[in-house]
Image (cartoon, rainbow, N blue to C red; front, side, top):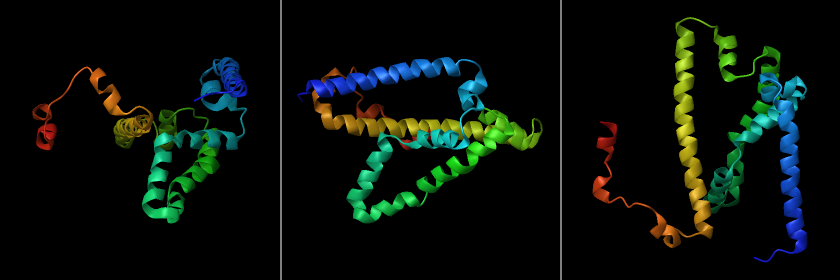
Length: 182
């Protein structure tokens, strides 16, 4: 790939702008927890909602949409309307307003506001949130690594780096499903 000086200039300008923006916003966010989590409550509610909704877009989701288009054709464009679009609209319209009005900055504080700070139900809700968070993180990591691996393999085939993998696992050392559970 040959980049012209204009291309290189655009890339360098973008990188410098992102670094400068990051350093400027770092000073604002370093004031306190509220400044870090909620922008010091100076951001309008729709910007908070937009930032929350934008956390849910990644390369794996894009690959999923392309694979749906390959499998179903143009009718696959309706699939995102089932859940993701309405989820993002809900997040943008309601969640940020609720967070602003409740004066909480974290999920744990929100649970305290919603369920109270003591009692059996509170303990159960905390446990459920922790278990869900652990399972979701593991699932998202696996989803991301598989998606990233498939994306990178287009440019760097596994056969070209296979000899650099530090170990090989033969099939007899991989446990079967029963061995994993028990």
